[in-house]
Image (tube, rainbow, N blue to C red):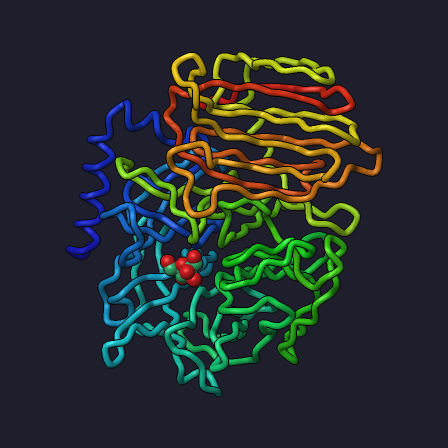
Length: 500
Ligand code: FRU
């Protein structure tokens, strides 16, 4: 093990050992959170040697982004994550400034990792693609790194923005999709092919799709997969302009595109999405969701996980030892042509203390349970007028006339679901967001809320819309209050969620 890797490992181990019970209470219970320091994107979400592996963009030494390492955890149930040894540190000439986002697959019974190596050229950080092989515990970078550079690309581009390889196998060949910034500043996806079993030699195939129709700016973090015969491309475009009609917000978005990838011509032809009559649709409408990655499990399920934070709105409290969580892994499916996301079924094993109740029209009340901060709440109603609101993680009202709280609201007339953390001390630059939720074909609206210590993910109408938001509020704030002026009663099913 190199000295730099050993240092990262020791730092992580000693920080975890010294974490107090009080500090542990600030962590999510059933979402992945970085062991220490900072984490962003999921990387190399893959199946290898009997376990599901998740790597992540990692800077162990502070709760801010810094020279990128690859942290590593594994799981067998997608809920409990076991800490593994840090996989990469920035240390070789090909990645001295950082080991950026990448991907993984099993090959020759070994675990092949691909990642972006950031290195210096005339004092400037440039990005190229690198590989490493491992056994699920330790990884060795190839001496041939970087294996893809500007030499492989037959046109000029911005060498500071060429990253985030997605690797997959098809017809006995390896393919890699990478995001790249064109000379005009727009994003595109380039495809490479390799018939080299060591994955060291690659040839450029084509630019398969590029930024157009408002999907402007650099594209990050591509993924590509087939789900129920539909081919999906996932990308995370930067610098988008808000377009409420299409469901896009200002800045970084994560979207999916469907269509057909022609491997001979190297062209991805887009189809129009039923969600918004456009060629791309938002994956998650909340504030805290970015750079998702998927895995196909051996039972056939396609599972997506995303970084549960936003580049534009940092809300981690100063005293936290860590910054960065992932969403609950979500099973993807298609219903009437639309993408559906639901928490993996493994989460249901955490359900405890069931309560069924009805909230009549025009009432206020309190939900009291064994654990008001970790729960799974399903609600269903039919209403055309009025508002339902839920205050979550509210400070004791008797002790403060302006208590801190998180508000989740549905306005039936506007058909608008909203999240608001502006009444907390860690609201961030973006403190609220909303999304339009149309009733189902039977006229009903259904929400499933998954609340953990620092987040609430809402899945509307059986997973047709996902809405993910994070917050940092003291664990003692356990008030859970509702108020309804809806012209219809609300049926509720409540479970606490616990890992013990
Ligand atoms: C996306 C991203 C990637 C990059 C990584 C760096 O969040 O910007 O494009 O590889 O983060 O940490």
